[in-house]
Length: 404
Ligand code: CMP
Image (cartoon, rainbow, N blue to C red; front, side, top):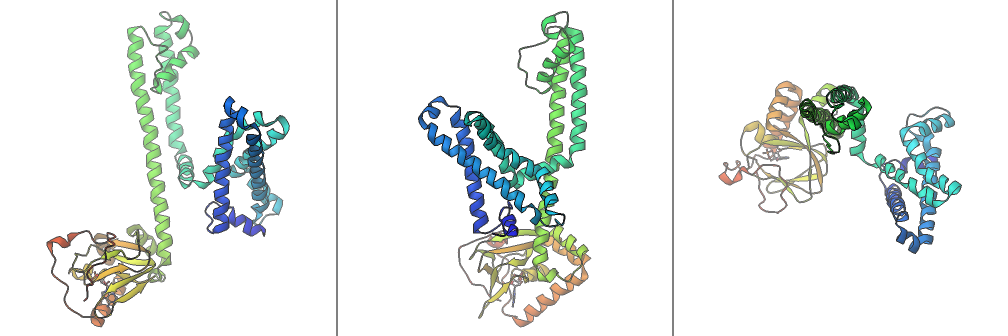
């Protein structure tokens, strides 16, 4: 196996059978390692399965040591690496992923030096190896990184309130309870248990001033955590929006219709489009329904049910524009022939886009005109009361074949 291929199949997002199998084995090893660590602390399990646990532990350690060696070896194949091989490997070894992989190989080393009993206690580090495979946790890391200034400010505020609360509690309570409020460090325990709203109740103020202070500190604690939660939630929502934008951007770039427009227009279009997936044989729209959006096909094939001959549209084509342009109901039913990835543009954004991008508007109008001339057919039916089911909902029951 070449180094490049090894690098490719060890990437967490790699597709293909080899990469999938490797990922499966990796996750199974993490689960087995954690299981062995838990079993090792249960006296009955240890007595009954000692040899089996021993063998399994050695095997898991060997796997993670081999994984570390493989990733280190493959590091120079990372995209953009054009340093000497040893420098690429050193850079990977010092990266967060490299450090955690080294920690993953640590129980194996401890096993050789001190024996399994001691080494298996460090098996918990293996759970961190799953972080690489979790996009959600990767996002969280970025969210915390981006919001670090705001989070640190809140942390500083927390520290200030904590110290002030401990000092005041010492002032109010030191005579009434010298054993637990006899010094500021001792009062800090009460302050932290109260400010974090944990409230163990092992230490409580007895004086009136002390109790009033406790009330203020409790409310302060709720505010601090509300701020933390708000900062993280906003950061998370922004990160999700960013990821959705990037995904839509990738999809927009695959639609030939947008190939010739500039980056500024693509950015605008990306903001307005929503990716949608439809299963094979699912109805995307039905003849006679009101039109509330149009679609661009990213992948897959759809059938426009026209009479006498249906028309097939594939990646790069668009449909559903005629109802939006004319205000009349859908002129034909459209069904997914294969599983499809589409980009939908709702009517409000359609009008907004057409108003701002005359070239796009002209291309869409010209195509609609061509379709109408090519297939004038019968007039679309008048809107029925029951036809207001939201167009674009996947519906798999095959029914009427419309035609224009
Ligand atoms: P609309 O009328 O909104 O809904 C049905 C869609 O089918 C229609 O918009 C067009 O996008 C598409 N369509 C209608 N006639 C044709 C045709 N002759 N060729 C390709 N697509 C068509």
